[in-house]
Image 1 (cartoon, rainbow, N blue to C red):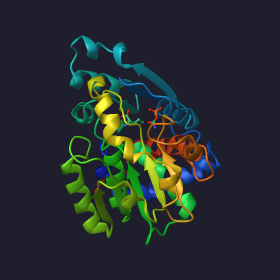
Image 2 (image 1 turned 90 degrees about the vertical axis):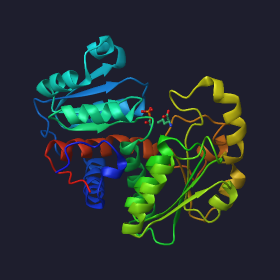
Image 3 (image 1 turned 60 degrees about the horizontal axis):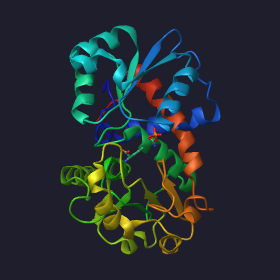
Image 4 (image 1 turned 180 degrees about the vertical axis):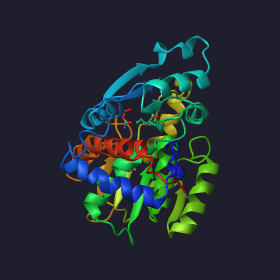
Length: 313
Ligand code: CP
Ligand code: NVA
């Protein structure tokens, strides 16, 4: 049994299949398991801003019959020197799960280690596992279960989203591509190596490229994310914008993709930076469905994690 969802790479293919099946059920009937968390509370602790993940988490808990307790980063005694271990123990005494968004992956891992309840990573500097479940539910709704012969391409910054994209694609046995500038804004080499190991077992294929046009050619999905992530140093902005400019998802780039391709984005988006308005607001964009699936997938994670049904790999 896997208590927590700390990293995308911790999920087994069976876990993902179970979560996607339950998510699809919740998309049809949000109140299907309306008493699963009755008289229980879920803490949602965030030290970075959030629109979707917060709303998705709070509404998911409500749909399972529980009470969400939202805690901003500066509201815990953690900021005044209380340890992560003591905080984890206290939250475990009151709540049935902890959803956490913060900077360091190590802090989320430590919360997991010292909690007796499931701890769910709602974004760190390194990863964004809950987002990828919503993305793959959207991919499956669009293309069905068979991903053979399809190419799933992420373009832009080699950030937390690029890591999660590579890893989940590998778990799903897909051909995944990440195209970024080389050097400072490439994905972490350890994450790429881990994704390659997973892909070797699943029959997937990992490509890390520096050419956006080669990446986009015949792709089924073009995915992008903001170029400045939460916590990125402002001092790097100008250089980063210059380096990433060729990776913007334009109508021209979309024109290279497969005829049935879609555009995806985790949001928030900056039209005119990482994506042209004509693409994100155009007919191939699935962003609104994708965003709504944040709730259905977090609801499924809470449902199965609280029943001890995640197996891990
Ligand atoms: N996609 C996503 O995580 O959005 P928020 O930052 O608004 O939660
Ligand atoms: N890479 C972005 C994702 C936001 C959902 C960030 O970390 O800010």
